[in-house]
Image (cartoon, rainbow, N blue to C red):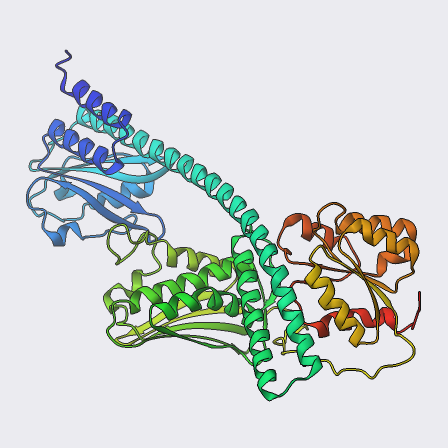
Length: 545
């Protein structure tokens, strides 16, 4: 067995690296061997924070290390360690009393050796040794500690590579999970949206038939709850879909509504009141909607966790507004507040006040990065009983002002005329939807024919001429896109007379098909008023088949 102390130190450090010990454990081992082999009075590992340009003492060896000394942070270029961090070159100081670069952290230190730890051509940190006498270290000591610094560099680089590899693997697994989840939820949403369409359409039809006041209240309740369920399904679809970095102009109220709707039920279960106060006008912002939703959900989750420790009624208030050319969103809670001494650190990566295993400390850091990438800011104010997070975003440079969608009023029941306004074909594999839509069209004095699959629709198209075709996209057998092409072969004019509907507008194949058309597509469930508005341009010709 080799008795050379340097060889033993190298072998032990390499064994620790091969066993994938934590970087801090390897650095502790390196510092211990460097201090022993150099016979140093003090030893320390110092890391360089490139953002703040500060030197942070992370490990120490030897006596006299008080908390005050360990908390000392020199600036880049300050003292011998700062000089080495700046130049990237080792520094052997034989006599501190005559060296102008020496910073007197210890009054009795007479010599110092500083060796840089370089990772990917950048100074990551330093190994610092102090001697009690002048000339305590020589070139041999410098070579030995430099070798140990190389091993430390190798351990850090290996951990960085492994961490990146693990991150990529996790990202791949998460992407696959999200893709699978998105497909599953899309299928479930399609199955939910079809009966919802039938319920909502029939409820609107009952309004057209005009029952008494008691009936009207019940019908309105059905309509409101159906729309609420449809919005929740839509939000789940948007949240589960594969993340897109493409930005779009979207109203700030829509962003708030999506996040609030996803959390409303959970907060109510936890006895937390959620108050949403949107703008009167939903001002447009240019954002990646899913990323902004992620930020808002993180703020709502943090507020919920804060209120879980409170004994009084928890209240979370989400507000949106505009100030000059900026749009803001605030999330306010009446929890215990954030202690002032940790406020400067809440957006730092890995900073968390939660118990081990309850949080990563990345949520607010990621939120800060995402908002900055959108040209905005996020900041917090807190006092006992009140914490406010404010997101500030630039107003989209667009003449379009996105008004909140108004509740559509029931269509007036038209008088019966001798002449019909037109003829429409309704195609869907859900009979209840076809029946309800055809009844609505009949009330609007429009002749409506029914088809429960694409093949039946083709037979009717060969027999009659239609002013418009209302068709579902996803159907067994001959689906909507195939029906569209075959109908166009019968009559090219049908290419602009289709009106599609779908309970699954998030699926990529659906989006791709819809974007390739000049025809409108309604997301199930939809107000009958909207359907009628899309049909009107085709019916104004008063055609008859």
